[in-house]
Amino acid sequence: MAAKSKCHVCDQRKGKRPCPARSAPICSLCCAQKRVVEIDCPVDCPFLGAEGSMLLADRQSSDAPLPTGEEISDFVAELMDAGPRGNFMAAAEPTAVTALNRLIEFADAEDTTIQGAIWEWLVFGAQDVQGQALLDRIIARLPRALTVSERAALRALHASRYGLFTIESFPSPDTVQVRDLLADEPLELYNDAIAERHHVGQTLACFVTRTQSGVEVVSGAWQLPKGVEESFPLRLREICDESPLKGIPLPEFVTRVAIVLPLLMFEHFGAEESGDAGFPPPSF
Ligand SMILES: [Zn+2]
Image 1: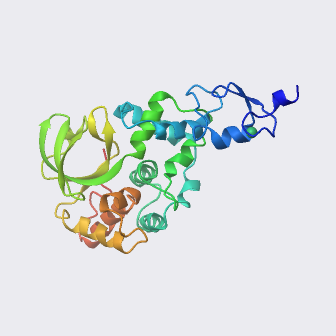
Image 2: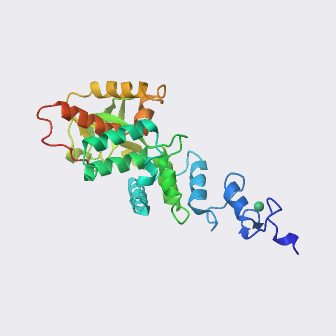
Image 3: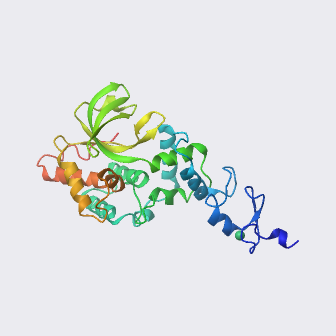
């Protein structure tokens, strides 16, 4: 009788959780350490939790269904409600933390545009020193497993990247043909409001990721000042080369420390006599 209640995995501790994958009880420690990684957990296991379902999302094959832009923004909105962000900042990569501190010197930290930029960096690109998305720390605090659409949204968030995109044309009301200035290649982007707000020749700085609609603009976009199309990428290259992250491709660097973009904007406008009028520029 006693053997019956032992953990099916370690055979040492008491098996208190009925494991659906093993059809036997396992202990909470084995469950926490081995779920998804060594145990073939079904998605509806009540012990999966936020962390287990995150692992599950990462392990899904590359042909798993893409989310809609709306599923991504719904998930991000929920995470925003889930907890204070202050705790996560200190864990971020030093290069990004330096940029963040300098940004706060320049800007009113309570300004909603700045708050938005910090949050977007945190959700879409920021990593800790081990290379783990800071987003995952926020998700781990959710008191429940992720739904199917949230797992799809999470994969898209992990795959999102930051870019500087110069608008070349609008093939349709909700698509825009751009030149990706960091990767130096043409790209078509999707956003249902982009044609209303922007025009050919403008350069936007924003996060994009693949959704059911294509490569979609998923964060607010900074409209860069005219004439920085060459100097901003060069300055970003410089910041990258001076950082511990030198050697990684520029698009990846800028994704991970996207918070340097608002900083460059302040530096730019700070150097311009009359630049303050419309700053911070509205994001959309
Ligand atoms: Zn065990």
